[in-house]
Length: 340
Image (cartoon, rainbow, N blue to C red; front, side):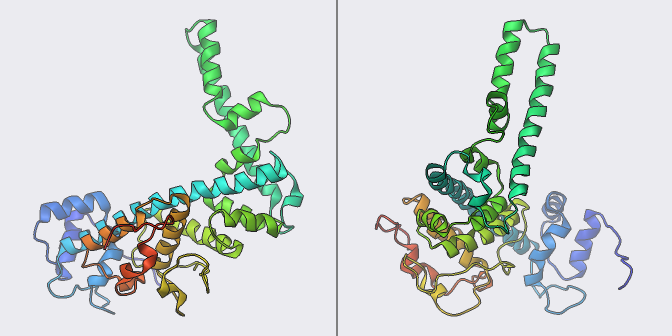
């Protein structure tokens, strides 16, 4: 291994470096503003499709312009925004379907019982996570009460403010209201978990009948739901960190239906690695149709891709004429989505 020796350079020097590499910059003022807002390092992955392959000097192909880089960056940003919009609804729905089955079936505090989970599931970690959240919420509430006590408000006003603060989150409301059980009920617990925690919780459920009943609410078999939650957790992390997504190869590949019992794109039934973002977008489209049957999310994806015809569909794993597949044209109610 060698010693790192690259110097840190300012934005004007970054522009000069890009020009030496053969990039055409027609409006240097706008390019400088872009690099001050986005950074050279974040833009670097969007340069690679336009550079000479295997060139150690990272030279650009002839005629490449700075605006081509920023346009690709803008496409990826908008693809992430569209993806996170679907992920938000799918994540919330996943919490709901688990809660709506486990609570009525096993009681309000079902998750406190270790027999609800496989032995390999870290049950104590789940309980500790909830305990820490409640304790932190109580500490915050106590500090707010101390500030209220130091204020010049009269006693009646102070009491009202404390009651209002206690209701601002369930993590502080529950332990200030109920003595037993010590932890909040299952429906509140699920709202405190990250999507990654939720994925582990579903995977850790002991009874297959519970897993199957939950997955059916999203039109899935249990193994698919388990795999898809795992994959969507990584995609959510990519979106949350504003990372490149458009041509990323999936590190955690979702299990795909070999013989779907629900509408599914023909391309993904065929053998192949399916390691690009297209498979994830298909998963999101299916789940969006389940949680919001009149959604036009697939149509929005179609129009985004039409707006950026220069972006490589192949790099994202899209088949040619992908939008002609009936999967993208029918809502779960049987009505056409209305785009061509």
